[in-house]
Structure formats: C-alpha cells, structure tokens
Length: 382
Image 1: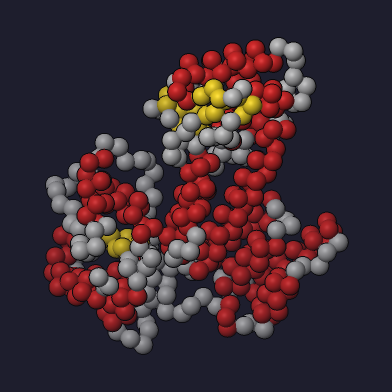
Image 2 (image 1 turned 180 degrees about the horizontal axis):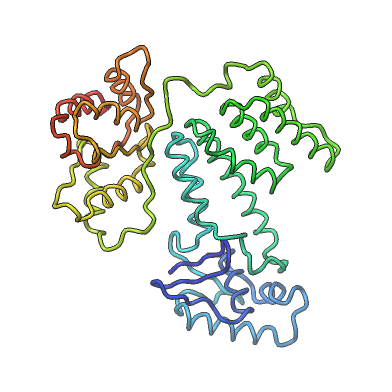
C-alpha cells in the first residue's frame, strides 16, 4: 500500500485508489501518518481535526472515523493504545519516509550517485507537501519542514550536477528557483557559478546584482560572505571556478518513461550477480526484442548507488566499426578526447580510479572490440 502526502493526499492499494472519501477521515489519517509508529491521543486528534475547537461529540466522531479507516486499510493498520491510536507502516509505504531515506543514502556518495538518488527523491513530489491540509494548523509545521528538506535536496542535487559539468543544463532551472525563492543565497550562488562556467561572466555578475537587490529590498541586508567572495572570484576569473579539465559530462543511466513490469525474477537475479564481489562482468543474452536493454537499465538504475565511480550507459547499436567503440565508451564515462595521453590510457585510468558501472548495449554489433573491452575490464578495480 502507498500513502502519498508529497502533493495531493492519496492512498493507493495495488494500483487502486482507496483514499478516504471524507475530509475529516483524510485529515485524521494524515495526522496518524505524520506520527506513524507513535501514539496520537484522542484529545490531540480532536484538537487537530477541529482546529482547537472540538465539539462535544468529537470523541465519538473520531471513533467512527477510525472504524471507517480500518475498514478501508485493514484493521491491523490502526492500533488502539492507551486512549489513542497508533498507525503501523511498512518500510517506504509513506512517500515522505522514502524521500528521507533517499536523502540519507545520497549523503557522502559520488556525484553521479548523489544526482541519481536525489533526483529519485525529488521526483516523489507531485505538488506542495500536505497540499490538502495547507490551511490546517496540525500540518503547518510539518509542511514547512518538508518543503525546506525539498529545497535542500534540490540544492544538493544541483551541486552534484555542477560537479558533473552540467552547468548549462541547470541554468533554466536555477532561474526559476531564484524567482520562487529569491532570498536563498545558495541558489543565487549556484546560478552565478553555472552562468560563469557556461561562458556568461556578465550574466553571472548580473545575477549577483539581482540577488543583492532582493536581499536589500526585502531584508535590508547585504549578501553573505560566501556570495560576496564568489562575485570577487568571478570578477578575477579565478581558476578554481572552472570545471575540472579532461572530464566531460558522462552519459548517465537513462530513465525509461514507464516502470518495468513482470520481470522481477530476472531483475533480482541480474542484480544479485552484479553486486557479487567476485563477478565483474554480467552479460544479458537473448533474441532481439525481448527487453534485454530495458532489463539492463533497470538493474543499473537500482544498483547505481553501490558504485562510487559512477554509473554510465553507452549504446553501440549504431556502430559498424570496432574502432569507434573506444571514443564512444570514453564519451560515455566523461573522458574528453584531445588530451595529452592516448584515449585508451585515459579511459583505463578513469576506470581504475574507483569501482564504476558501465552498461554496454548491443555489443554484438561490434564483436571485434571484445579484446579492447577485456583490456579495460582488467584495468578496473576488483
């Protein structure tokens, strides 16, 4: 069962909408979800549902709402305990809990894994948190806390994108974000850096002036030290602002538009093999059109966080010359051509840094490149 509060309130059971029909039932369930595993006293629930002015019939009404929720969700979901109620949840049934778990998993990981995990976390939002209860006092503090976590996750994901060289791609998103949250200096700093790395120094300095104007007009404050220092570094074209050279943005694992259905056994087996320490190569074979690529993408997506060196995808379907495999693979993992070292040496060095996951699609089109791929596999860490 799925409980969704990161947007419109929804309860879904095996694809079927079982959202409580009555407003007070939805509000009571939302309160219990926010306090899942904890006892919510009947009097506390009455105060929340009637905004501090419960009628004399509130306790009886709550008992009726709990009975209706048990009929909808299962009696074992809501336990009566010491004059109150406790809602029991399984792991990740509540989208907020899944969001917080993904945030925790992203901390301290490589930029590729961080961007992927935070992207998945942010995709759980379908609107404003606790949108149906935005005028209810019981939800106000939690809604504000969740929205702050969302902004922090956005900022962290954009930091990862900037580290991966995606500065041009994040500029439009950052322009929208600074319009929505004009007092968040971190977003302004990210916009300035993204513009500067995109070759738009004048626009980066103009972004600083816009940030300063917002802060002075709204709060009477000058920008903080970090933002002021960033402006000075942009003015002086400080070398540390540049994206690390020799590393182009990699081709990350694509996200398919629809979920993978009916392949649970194959998915579990392939993922198990991929994560075994003694296995460094997993090959998916079968007739064309049986979904090998789709299965490989899902395995890679679910396992990407376990590879600190990043997860990458290279399609070889359009190649008819084995000589083209090396530059295609180098581009996929973020190695720019034209450096001092030979491309094969640069690629081997890149794969030797930290364990990485590379998905090669349609290798059979260039079977002559098998020896090259074996050499690269030997260079990768065990």
